[in-house]
Image (cartoon, rainbow, N blue to C red; front, top):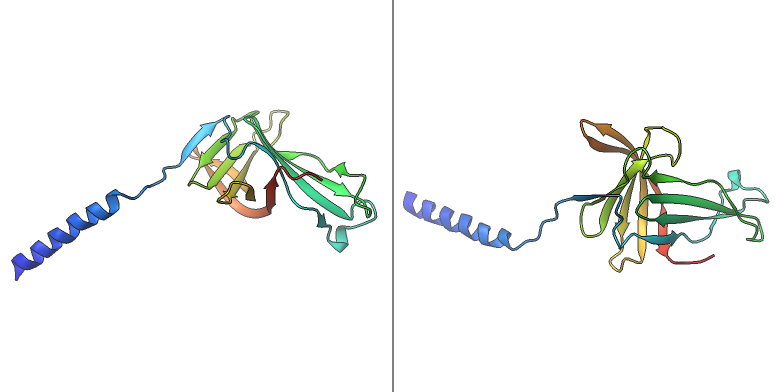
Length: 172
């Protein structure tokens, strides 16, 4: 009886090794100041109506733009008046290669983390972090922002906030 249990256990272990040896595992890889080809370029949201409590005749609608290069991960929000013209920019924000290098970490085939300096000027050591989920076709992405803090030599992401659904190359 013990020999049969030992034989069945050995067969199960060997079978498990063969089953799991063919699976692909993704180790996260971090690239410094080198954006992945799938993320580079301009990304834009659709035009949205501003919530009523923040709306007036000058900022009735808004849309967001995301620019990704090797040194810049920049978000801009453009406000439109009630006729959807005369847009103005509310100011850029994002992650930059300034005090810290801009890092692009590939977590899986469609998920990325991006972090770097919060400001593109001055000597502030504040960091900004973002999470990206690409669609299967790499034409759409969901963007999340995080508070990024350095802890014991690695970046810790807390307080996730949904930034929006972006499309590649859509013009307004």
